Image (cartoon, rainbow, N blue to C red; front, side, top):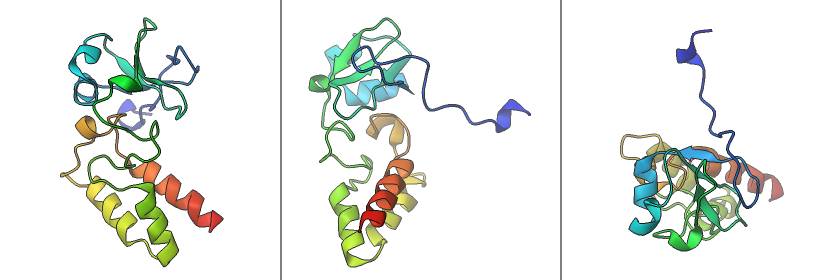
Length: 147
């Protein structure tokens, strides 16, 4: 199959030096936007985001250098469960829970539509540099089943 039609993996073979989770590769622009200046200079390209909510490593590189959540400019999901799932548009778990309590999807759907539009700035706003759509949908579906 032509490689143009094959989706690249969202994870690398590089593992977080603290928790062992597979890293999510991030661009330099993401590191610059998410980290205080001194911290983003301390790891090399490519950087990786550690997706484990309880691990204090935010980013790491192939040389086992780490930057912790203390060096983030602001709280990020999933490291901080109160941070917005959608960093571009501010959709939180509470917003989704409110949709579920009301039996609707207005907030969730509006955020997903905006996140898929040209106004989304995922590379700068998201800790992973990727769209939040999968996380938003996953949270919604998991909690819908519980309700």
